[in-house]
Amino acid sequence: MILSAELAQQIIDKTQDILDANINVMDARGVIIASGDHSRLGTLHDGAMLALQRGNGLEISEHDVDAFKGARPGINLLLQCAGETVGVLGITGPPSQVRQAARLVKVTAEMLVEQADMLSQLEWAKRHREGFILSWVNAELSSEQLHDWAERLGIDVACRRLAVLIELDRGSPSADLDAMQRLMDLLAHDSLVTQVSPHRALVLQPVMDQAGQRRQGAHPGPDGAIEALLARLARHDIHGVKVAVGRAFDAPGHLHLSYESARQVLAIGKRQFPERMTYHYDELRLPVLLSPLNDGWQGEQLREAVERIRGADSHGRLLKTLAMLIEHEGNLSRCADALHVHRNTLRYRLDRIHEITGISPHCFTGLVELFLGLELSSGDGAH
Image (cartoon, rainbow, N blue to C red; front, side):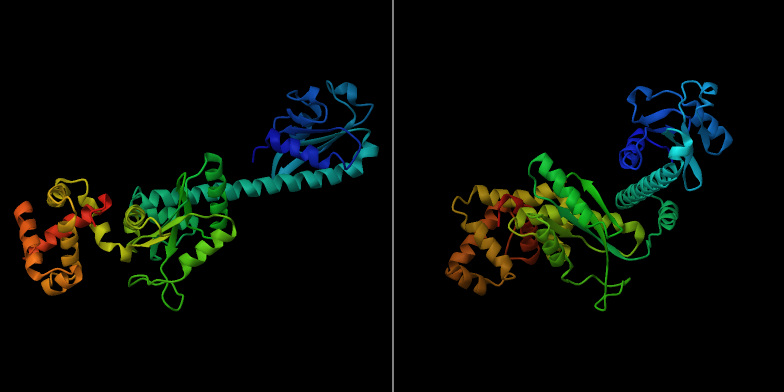
């Protein structure tokens, strides 16, 4: 561990009241990095350098000061952390008067150093774990790297998991930062959680069976975990969040697919159901599976038919009719009843759709093609 000037100053601030004397803190080179006498900052402390060389504490009496350049009477004690010397604590004053208090100051100082070291290690472990999660869900690791890194971190990659994305409501930058910090603190008990954007956190949730045991097969059923999470966030004044649950995949190397599915679920859920707070893959399965078509020429071809209908349908009757026919699985009688129109009127509208698009809604494949076009166009409010 490297003793920083900030930590050294904390040591002085915490121990200054223990005794009425000046306290210096030197790093492992003997340089004064914190002191009650600011004029001495950045200078070499001969007594500390000798103590470091000897590997033991050093007392300087009134009679010894001439042997040390710029030294004053006092006691220099080694500061140690995990068996390593990280610096020197210097207490100014006649050794006989400060010796007893100096030991207490040393104990207090080393407790602060050990605490800082522990926090540093915890922070390092947290960052290392978050880095692993990001690499895992972005498919950046080979199978060997995945298992080696997971073993060192104590993570069971054989456990079947699904990605849960939590998105915060966007406010001011300072409010966003505070809310995200509080969110991450609340999720800290879950070992597999990381921040993936300024407004999103990712939790890799183990898939549980009905008995509460982690399971390797079958799709995860609905449970109250998300509702419990939302209630907990609300109790901590975190509101307006969106939660998207992706699909679980069996192989550890496929976890990135669960993450990608959660991202798609969130995007589609927000677009189609903006009033809702939670979205699940099982509820949005088809639009999620169709989403890769959005940017390709195939998606453009499927949407083109819907756009043609929309362009020739100023009152929206044809699109409404098509959506109703799909809802009633192609059954003309039930569709006509739901629309409160005569069957001949319904047939006329369907023939008109065929005329506009070149695709017949009377046949199964034509209806499926038009249905897919409606699904891909749903973000534009087609139905």
